[in-house]
Every structure is written in C-alpha cells, then in structure tokens.
Figure 1: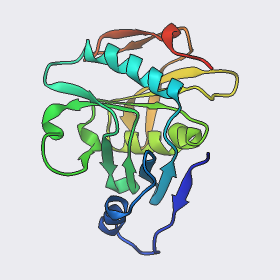
Figure 2: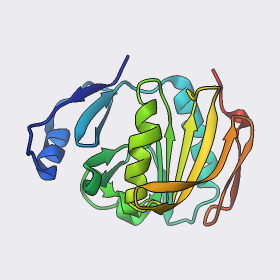
Figure 3: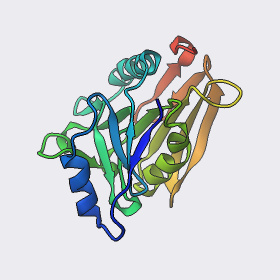
Figure 4: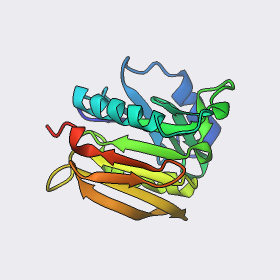
Length: 194
C-alpha cells in the first residue's frame, strides 16, 4: 500500500493544518504526518520494520540518562518547515513529553531514527532530514532498508540550516558509533534484511 496525501486549503495557516491533523478520523493503525505542509497517511509498518525499531530501542535505553526516554509514535513539530513528523524512534528528555498535547517541539529531541518503508523512503531521505536539521536535532539515524544497492545505515549530525553532515555511512551488518551523549556502538548485524 502506498502513502496517501490530503491537501489543505491554499493560505491555510499552521494552526489550521495542525487542527485538521488532530481532529480528522484517520484509518486505524496508519501513520499520519504533515510533511512540507501536506498531510500524509502511510500504512502501518511491516513486522521487520518494527523489529529493527524494537532492537534499536533496547540498545538506546541502555545508553541514555535516566531522565531521557525512547519514544515510538511521538509526534515532533517543526512549524518553520510545515512539518508534524512521527519518527520511528525519538530520544528526548521525559520532561518534554509529560505535559498535555499530542506533540513535542522537534528541538527537544536528542536523536531521531527513521526506518524506511517502500511508501515513505523518499520522505525519510529528503524531506524529513531537512526538517530535523532545521529544528537543530543533533543526531538523525536513517536505517534505509530500501536503499539502491542494498540496506544502508547513515548517521547524520552537526545540523546547519536544513542539512546535517554525514558522520557515518555503512551497510547492514556493520557497526555504527553513536557519539556522546550516547557513546554507543550499534551492531547492525541483528537487523533483518528481507
């Protein structure tokens, strides 16, 4: 199944777009995001996608401070890029999630992780990294199961404007080093490749 998009009225402001995102009844189990001002509805991720996220979450939990956590399905807001994004994993201080609401400011995230699916690979490679960099998120980990030439992992950091610098790029099976404050070597050989 492909991602669907829902247009909004020309001239509609950010608050109206977020209200539409929050109030519409979307298909159960789907992932609904605002990407570059367009509401995008993607199907639920496949089992192997979720397995990668779960294995990575377990590793991250062992390396973060006690007042941080790893969140799945946590919306992060980047109004300057007309984006309400739901990364596969977000590492952020628990304090920013404790209040009311449906999202956190993206700038509060320490790390975001996206695992590509066939329906969202372009967004994970192009649109989302630009929004994450613009928000100043220090680290972005792209686990690209659908990369041409085979699955890859790219760690981005040092955001400037709407781009991150590539800190490390490798294939599934290699080790990725997450710098401090994580100080974690991720063995990616446990990630399913099918």
